[in-house]
Image 1 (spheres, one colour):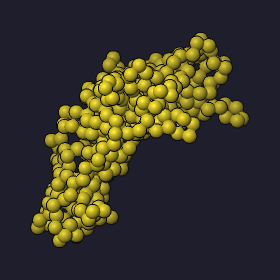
Image 2 (tube, helix red, strand yellow):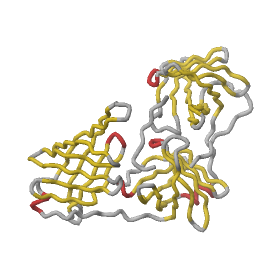
Image 3 (tube, one colour):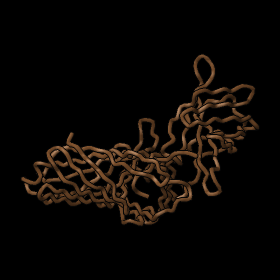
Image 4 (cartoon, one colour):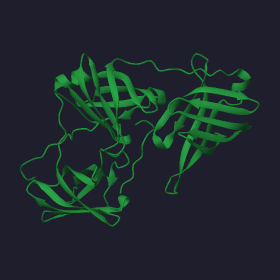
Length: 348
């Protein structure tokens, strides 16, 4: 019923909202509810309404559980006699509900299906000064996935208003920092969401560390154990064992698209960029970028280039690429998770 984009990595999170008992004076603000997509999946939905100077409202729709649904603009908003009607063309959906007490009870309709959705005023829980001081700074630690162990890095900082924010990265995937939301720390329990990949982390504080679990993807997806300790982590450098003569024809940026056929028969194009560079210590290094997945700087762990044949290996994700290099073109195959797909890269 909805579309979700997900990163390469794989905890239920307590809902960080509270109901307001008194009926609101107007619609402006954030309203939140749970959409029961199926018996095992409930999707958090937020409507953010803004009052227009000349009257009426605009709205955007978010889902903290789904990174693919963020700031989706409503086509129209009608709020008349305590009846709300919202059209969301980008999702081929609409919502109709009536104010009852302090909540709006209604139906979300999308692609011919209707589901009940009750919206209530939402307020973000404010962190105490003690909680903010506990979290401020850098944290890192392992997360154990079915395909191996990865390293999370989490950075918490305050903005000019003293509000706490944060980012999370994965060392083995280039440590691209992704924004956190719904950060909470109470009674020694930490929780936050990673909206862009529909990720959630919950952990308990003990002996200077947070120990808990991380889940990514649809609600009900399996969680994996994670431990976070205070402090920064050194980024690993994979110096490629290439001679100058081997590196020279590879140096620079190469780009192309990986065509992936899904089980339903649909084919998607995944743009990739492969970069061969020299670092500050004059070492030969290489990185893979996946722009549509917001992943940049995934390190290449190994590379060989002999007789025009290139072979590279990545640790996270566990993948390999073998290609024939002719001038400004690489023609080969990408291997990952038991799949083998053709991939042609051209020098930029």
